Length: 301
Image (cartoon, rainbow, N blue to C red; front, top):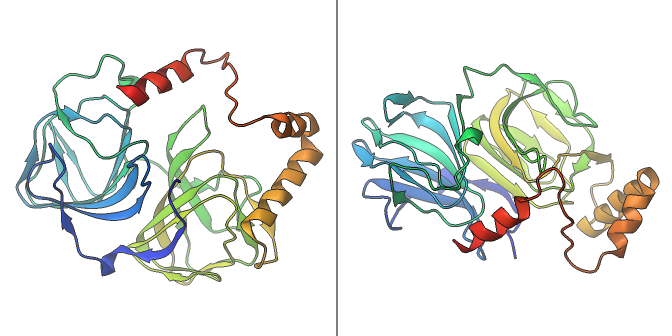
């Protein structure tokens, strides 16, 4: 079924719940931003009480973490506000503690939250892919890396990029008085959370600090505006391509047909190949010949 369209949603209006899943320990509280009821994959706001601690351990699903407030002590390193971590499945983190408390975003991308105490990686863990960086201090803002591009005044920091899907996690900001007057949609899912500031969108109104959306493919959104600017964290599951138009009343089905028509004009043979497939088709990946085998095995471990 996947995750439904959620927009707009303001998590600051919702109380925290105590985390009761095995392994996570007392002193951890959460709010669900979005949830895939089939797989358990979810996006959470998590609050760690002062004095919270967790032994070394790993997750069986890919996990992303962003420290929105406070700090976490991870082994001998301190993750301050703005720190981002992408943890591939099976990669073990050192002991975690939060002497003064913290508030984080946590994204479990392919399964429900899990924690298994371990000071060693899973044998098939890909530690070399792990990302750990302070997104606010260690990366400079750059122009939006999408094509066609958005209006001037929107800047991006890429945190994680998947070379297989071209999905990516990124910080984005709108400068004061940012304005874009057209409608857009994408053929990927798009997720966003306002770390600071407020933006406005014609269809969905104002999104303040703590505002969130989960937007499936083909959903119209725009025009955009931000009076005083905003800073947000965003994620996609494949390449972000902007389809621009000026009709706010088109349906997702009409938008999908319009995108298919563009594919037909630009890559006709690919369009015909896609139309000819019956159900799911997973061709051999010559660059990563064992990729699908790993996915298959990980799904059943």
